[in-house]
Length: 515
Picture 1 (tube, rainbow, N blue to C red):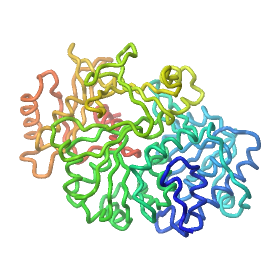
Picture 2: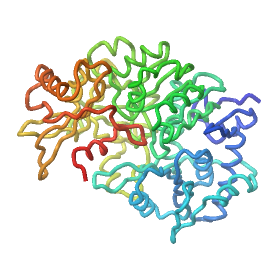
Picture 3: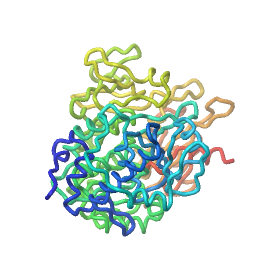
């Protein structure tokens, strides 16, 4: 049996049935450090774990925490928790202990699956080590079709909260189905076997954007962990041997790779498309990919965690890159609606900036046990009766394409002037000798006293050190008012990225405020 590919073509079929369809093909599903799980392994392990969870938890339907980092059985565990009718909550081992404790404290789980080892909770059962291995491999595979309810929560991903406490975003099974239906036409490259790069923490929802589409299409996931990413020569060797044809990534991760002139088709010889999500894609990054990976598609997308990974997409063209404008985030996928509204919630004319609202079937269930916070951001759309989400992102619509401008809260006030940090960053990137840049406000007594720029020069920059800093300030003065020019410029070999592949602004802040 070659696998029906039902979900691969339509995207709306049940993901668990799709995995079972491919179980008879002998195809690889997950490849990690020389180990391989076939689809039959994934299906059997997930079903065994579901049965074990039911025996341990009984009628308790509280979410199940999965604590680990890229272990080969993490994905079967996610599926197994879902098949048991419970939400899974991926927590990466890079999370500080205080954050893990805060998440567990909010969830009050009956069960925690611990790949890292060492957890010992008085209020929950820990499944790890030999016990976890037995649950995945030695238990009986239950008969019948295990199908979680569409209205049930599939997963909860915790993001940063403005109060400092993490907030858990709940995504239903039906939201995930809608995402797969909308996204698959962009993702699918035909019947497999094909390989998809898996390089991001499972606690980051970008990983959802390739795990489930890959499994629904019968593709293999090539897993890359943190240790590999931290060693560029090892990373490039691993990528060259991966066979990866689809890369779903943040711009920051690819920009880090592009800082090396070696990052080209010798590293990813088979790649057919780069799909960007999680951050704004800059024209310089897209241009370099087009130059180094001729023939590969560059697809830009947009979507908050709250609306199931992404809701828009567009293939970036050379004309878009050369236009001098910011790159579009695309058109709504499927039957998703995007609206641009003013502060009173009224639609604005095309070309005018306003807040992006997302309405559709992929809009999630809200924040776990945070009804007041949910009520502030989620709503029922009066026109369609569908769920909506107010993103807090500012954008505009022009000629049928949507554009992202900034967060509503990315504006700072310095000496009475309102300054958009993204505006300063974009002007830094206009300097021909700057490869990457980020700008942070510097506070003193709760007031912004200056801007601090962090830059990565291009190879062969005409000057370095103090000379480079002086050149930056001199050339910025030709592009923007003096009050917008950063007071300090720090030159780095690369901008730091976090385990989610995004720019690590906390690491930059620590350079400003060393402990």
